Length: 243
Length: 243
Image 1 (cartoon, chains in turn yellow, orange):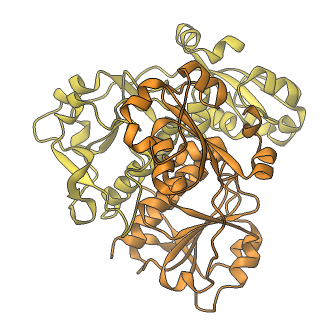
Image 2: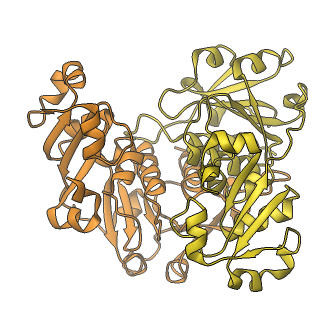
Image 3: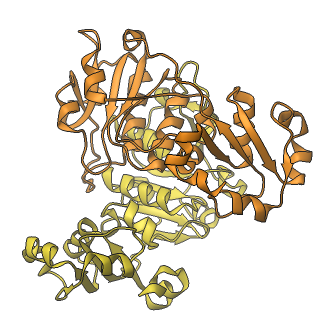
């Protein structure tokens, strides 16, 4: 079990760890295949009907759960799940819906928060550059708060993939010198690309943008930038406010 | 130095750790007192003028920086700083400006991201319930990306403090059953209270709200909630869009 903490092992075996009762129940509800479920007798008693959707749970103590997983405390449940097979990403999708694309988002907490955000806005999925954190790392899965079971992810060579999109597809990115997002007429279609926490978009991705958007800073504001999930949230709220 | 990782020691000594070159330079620029600065010779050579604002830097290797601090890698600099003395919080402040108040935000990464967000919007400061994470914990400071040096924090018994505000002060909170934030006429004055990641606002704080705001979910969205910093960002963008 300890070896599931390592990305190489997770990929070879196509399995990943789901920690915490809420996430385990989301997993079982979603139809993503659960290989095994471990939980405390208390959690099993409280969630008998929901747990029936998965393999018979193995009773363990909270101390054993913490031992098996990566969380310092887990008093409820843990599951080993099988990575869902990748579904096709139709090239015409960004003409009817908004996709989120992430360029070198290496922090698993930020990646998980962004997947949760994509789920909140009902986006069809998230395209990940090869240099993003692993969407199935324990910290990523935990930060999605259950959304990992609903949001599709498509790992791609991001600049190359952006190059395959039909002409006229809106490719949006945050840029301090872009248009004020409050004054932009936005509809939720195209691709919103968010860059890494420290370096912004890579040059090859930046070159593919068709529109640059700027989040206005408050009067007297001092910070040079915002967290990547925070920026994505503000932009998405602006994309969806007309809907 | 290792003992600075512990909250009890940090409070007794009134000092805290600042890790990473960017944060150390923000510290020196801010006027918050730096007790000592450790950096690699490369960093010292590149930042001679900016480092002159602090005590003479002690040259150390990147391996020594990682040893002294909490980050897995730190190839630039680390400082030990003195907690700035608390400045008074005028009770009438929320009538002229918007304050952020946090109720049981226990995750230091979220707290730091919220302090950075407050800095982006130029808020006068952040009021913290006694149950929030330590604003000077290394993970909090790192997540502020330098904003720790500019944003004032006021630890308070939050429900009691809210009770001292003049009648008519707007006290705003996020609530799934609140008014759609896109249709609310909002000006940046009053107090925006954000609750914990898992449990929302505590009952005593909830009872003090004068307005409840709801962030609309996207069509077909599945997530039940948003990360606390993400929610605060969307609400703040809505408070400031008329300014």
